[in-house]
Amino acid sequence: MMEKPVVFISHIREEAVVARAFKEEIEQRFLGLTDVFVSSDEDSVPLGQNWLDRVTTGLRTAKAMLIVCSPVSVARPWINFEAGAAWTRNIDAIPLCHSGLRPVDLPIPLSLLQGIAAADPEKIQGVFSTVAAKLGSKVPAIATEQIAETVRDFEHVYVEELQAATEIREINKLWPELLNALKSQLEFAEASVPEHKVTSVRPQLEALQRKQFLQFAFGLTNMNIGGANSGAFGEFKLHIDPRLQNIIRRSA
Image (cartoon, rainbow, N blue to C red; front, side, top):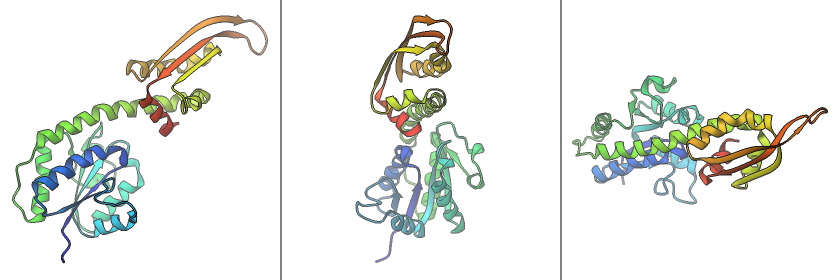
């Protein structure tokens, strides 16, 4: 029995929403003409099967590749490995750029490919035209606006999380003990915190508070004059959203 041609979608796990949006549309519109390989999908890699073997098989039979590209994913070695495999096998590969990454921003080797903005309906139509050509099929009617809306909704949340991760990394440089505590609890309270410590991370805390990732308060309670412990001290309270705790666990 001949294997079906494969459309291979390369992505990192955090960006699986974008990969699935394209996968589902390809499967629905091309009516079984092709298999779609998405590494985070149980249909592509059933439980108990060797992941690398499945990836290798997917690459061997791929007719086209879509590469989900963001400022995060393009820095991951595996994305570049899969893109390189497509390049060496002359597989048509299209970077799908999202979450602040534009096609002109793609690094080498991805910049050698013709990327698109993943939330642009007109460009999405072009992706499906390429897939149809590789499958020897007519171009079906595609719900391009629906895909674009899914990508835009994802971008809104994902960009905020990327920005939050940047703030978290800065806090970790200045007050690592705080983030260590927040990895296992949503609230932090301490009665005698040096004012300079809170001041050093206040810009990051305020940025996260504006995005409703946390709420914090600090009030001066005493002043020490002279000695090694001189300075202003106060009560510091912090409550974080569970979303931020997940970001802390990944980032700090």
